[in-house]
Length: 124
Image (cartoon, rainbow, N blue to C red; front, side, top):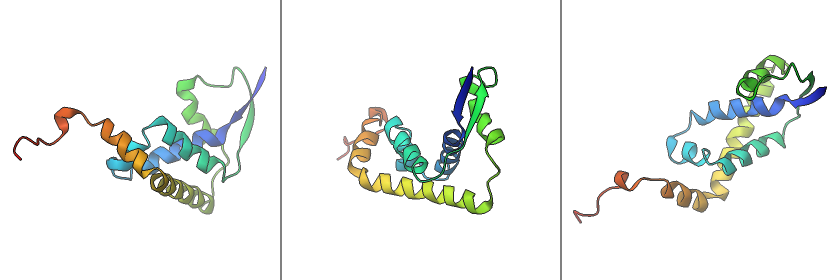
């Protein structure tokens, strides 16, 4: 049986991870570790670029754990302009989502702080 595989999404996820690693942990990496925000960023980028698909037989589709590498081997080579456009869209998406959801993010990120990590109010 043949299956249509979206190669673009895996490539975008890899690029998002790479770019987020260049941002400070607080609040960016912590915020986009939240699955809903990560998916919103992926959707933001996917809606703004063309998708690449491949038809593969079930035997050709690697297991879930190995699918990350699939995108790099099957996507067409990206000229520099396309790569920069993708990176720019990711940066725009990060900024837009953080601006739009800043209150929600600060509330969610603060919830995840462990009480032992908070500064003591004991000393006044």
